[in-house]
Image 1: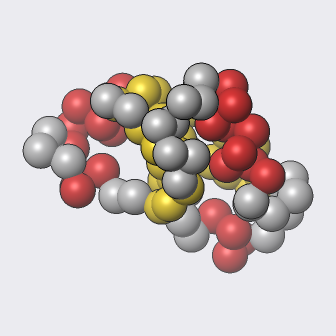
Image 2: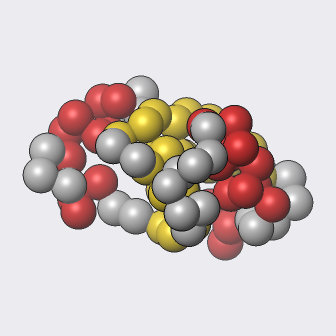
Length: 78
């Protein structure tokens, strides 16, 4: 099981250099993250990522996938 710091490192290791995490929250066993990459506009098309802290699996996500998308958006600071 990864902790949030380890999960963040795993995520950033697979994204383009210069990507930064601008907000994050835990949701169950997932770390939900919003990223930004100022180096390339195309890299900003998928700002929402999640890391399953139980398995280490990394994938993109949409807040709409959850039962209460407003709580996800609010929890991420938007």
